[in-house]
Image 1 (cartoon, each protein chain N blue to C red):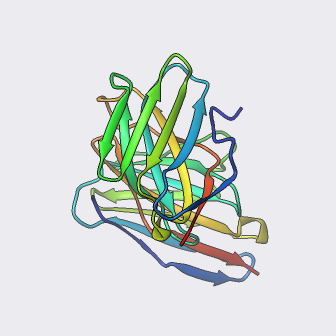
Image 2: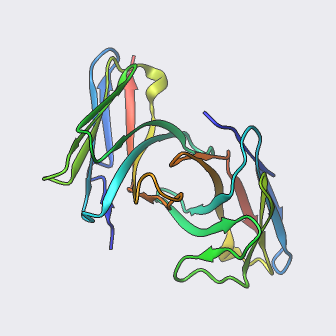
Image 3: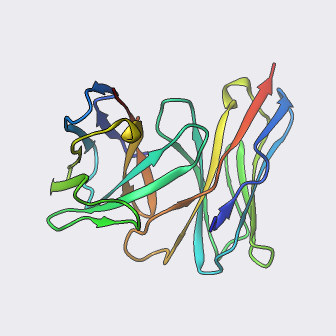
Length: 115
Length: 113
């Protein structure tokens, strides 16, 4: 049972444009969501997170939106740069603020930013 | 962000041997660390949660006698793949958590011949 899904396996955008990564989840108990970027043969790098008490969080070029009723979150990168080309994973966890909990990862989406 | 060091980055071994992978938190103390496995073009799958000073918690389907985890200090967790076989060949990644955010090591590519 895939509790966190990323339905777009890949996306290509032009440099300077907005790129959007989408993620859907099924477990309503999830209350903390994170986005990671991953290059081949490397560990994931944390980008941005959001708790379920918010619907938007911004950090520089990255903005994450959370729609709890739709169980959907998205990552916006503005403007996109060639160095953003990587696989993007969303992840979810339960019991934010308590003991450290395990992350459930989505399947990942490959982003290619064309110069 | 916090820094996690993982070693070795790549290891090749013969079938039947054991391989130890180290995961260190360099600038924070990690009461809890996590071990993941990733197959090509697939997501990260949690194998186990490593708890300092106590037994690890394994995910369903992960053999605890096959994948031995030791978390003897607040900065070091080790994963030992015992009697490795070709089907154990994979990319293994560890993480440590700081305030609900997990920071990952660079991963270890294990190839079992």
